[in-house]
Amino acid sequence: MILSDSIEKNLDGIIAEIGFDFGLDKKGQVWMFEANSKPGRSIFSHPKLKDFELLTRKLSLDYAIYLTEQTITKSISVPQ
Image 1 (spheres, rainbow, N blue to C red):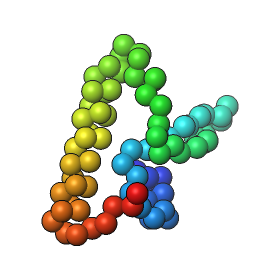
Image 2 (tube, rainbow, N blue to C red):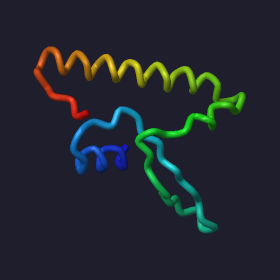
Image 3 (tube, helix red, strand yellow):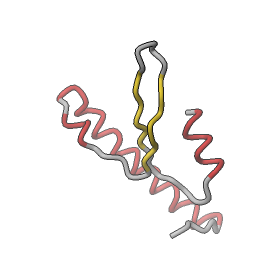
Image 4 (cartoon, one colour):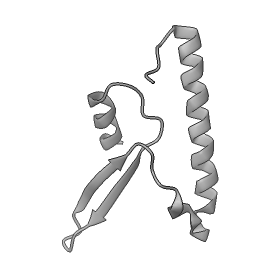
């Protein structure tokens, strides 16, 4: 949450979905390699993650609906 909040505060526009690439070093320290505004979805091909694939697709659509409602009701411009 801290990472996504920081990115959101420092970028113009709206990022609807973001994917983070993390790794662990030998000391157990977490490192972020990159953040992607159009993350890959191949991770969800793993059988244990199938339910999460559906959830993430649903949440993306829910957010798109929210942005549309905000644009209509509050005259917020959405960057293109």
